[in-house]
Length: 411
Image (tube, rainbow, N blue to C red; front, top):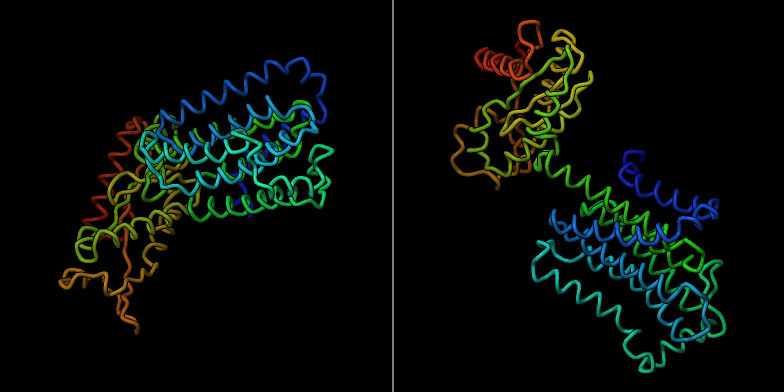
């Protein structure tokens, strides 16, 4: 459970901090209000620029949505009003934000400058514009909903929950939006900031009439966007897309920061080319992901990396070779014992070379196979102080492991 909640913590902490300041630091906020107000717009522009620069359309759209919401709340909805026009706009704005977030989340992933992104912007702007175009042309049902909901005489209050059609629609839309956001973030791997934005939008609409609430809530939301955007940008630069392990660039930077005592292990999947030729690249990718997952479970303080192709490496900071051997042996054994199931339809007809790795067919026509890895390991010495030299020594030890029959650890 803690691991599942961890990605949401930065945004949740910022939202809690914003609420704490609103409730307890009124005097401080009064002195800094103008600065904070315009800082919100500044951060929105910075986030939008970075989103376009890094080609992150989701972040660009959500920044625009936050900016629109912030501007309209600051401009039109700060003072309670008994005007039905303002109340109608408020109700629609409260409904528009979660609906637009889901539209943005479900749109196909295309580059920022793709025509589909302009269509997305036009769609949520058209939804937004309806109450502002001509309030007199509203349908009778919309007026009736507000009047029957009891907001004609006073501004709609969302808490405590009045049993009105409009308030229930707003609460229901945010509950559904939050449920959908959590599902999309988990199952479709959308940015974890999506549920944070739904919560921020709900609090903003819930308490927009309170001093400083909208300003601090938007600041918290846009700072969350910036944090998640930078995290994703870091992942794109440093993490290997296929395996999820840190890549070669991350390894190079890690080696530059090593101390006087460390050990580096190089490992390679045995007969991987034959396996790839036999079962196809899709199955080969599955093998690499499986191997990476086992390597990522290394104990002893080892830090795993994907070196390239079917090669991986592990850096043990502060450890000698002797201190790492048991941990590397555990990784080798875990990979050797893992049984990968392959359906017969995924295999080409000619698979003579693959027979060496076949473990047998199951009753339903699938095939159980396993792979092994060879590991070479070297440590820093007084003669070999350069991390790149230690890495080359580990690579030489890897070749010795291959020459010794594979599926073993050599130093």
